Image: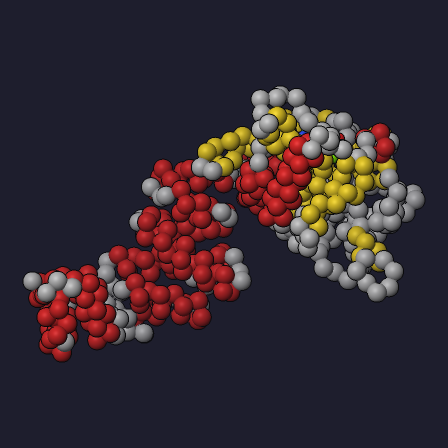
Length: 474
Ligand code: ADP
Ligand code: MG
Ligand code: ZN
């Protein structure tokens, strides 16, 4: 029998607020353990939570960007469970009345557009962190306690492990574009639980699912799902049935292992948080937030393809991150040649930013400066090779390219008679190559080209040289 897999994801992502969700403590990563805490996030009896407005704003941004309806009234609830990283004994979350409901995210998968439904987005706080890998007993760091999160829950609309991967990439991009989260999985600011079941092709009822946790990268999510789908098919194939349970992904062994049989919502004894009133706000605030939403990544990619006639691959690279897309459009405004701009941003700009380990908007090579350099290439003042040198120098010395081009003597030689003399002497010095060329070894043209470029110290205008070569060689 043929089976299809059915996947739904639950994604926790940390919001980029300055302070925590219910107190004034800084929301930072990497501070000394237990130094960024107060009675509220330590869960002292009698301390009271005060909701951070920025958290609500970011949740609304995420909801609007994923086509959810924003609920005029939502309710905070206590999710009760005992664990040492949760001193209060409950986590403040939202349960049956979350802030965002019923959205969808368009994604591209294998070149086709698909839509993944979003069931809900709710706001909650993160517990603290237990550190087990010490020689001593387990250690507890409560800096993370009270860090604001949103949990995004998808419909079971995903049909393969690789589609889950593409969805996560798309979601991460959206959240980054919104400035809602940095989605850094290593630092735990994005975590994904993957729910998966299988069912016979054509069946519409859902099968029994398992939930996989503990993946620390999108590739790990993909691998864990591949493994789990294979395992479920084997179980069903051997006549047994799937047991609903929570599994942990073991990245060293590449297998899932049972963590616990699945708990139910009633195990948490959810009830409305008595210390917080229902969350309500004016429609006008939502409209205001909506007005300031950026153009979203997929839309922007599609616009790059139609406006600038870029290939899907190039448009993808250029819109992967908002700073790069913004950078591209600023350079384009100056140089007006989208292909040239795309090539230089994708090669040089991304190279330099990677080498320097900074984002493109932190480079000394500003869009204005690159735009100027590209204009010089276009009007053949400098060669592409010279432009690369200028770019490195601009980045090194944080100086104006025009000034540097003069100082470095990179202005291109386009003077035909001067170049003709150079090319003639190259041909004279290499009679046997000229002979071979004339006998049909046409690829020697690049040899002559290279020699001429070297003779002009890279300053010869390649187009001119090419024209002269063709003419002299007949
Ligand atoms: P739970 O109460 O176990 O957390 P939910 O119904 O809240 O389950 O769903 C959690 C996630 O699991 C959602 O993303 C949902 O789309 C997905 N899901 C639910 N049932 C299935 C199923 N049978 N197969 C695959 N995914 C499922
Ligand atoms: Mg769940
Ligand atoms: Zn605090």
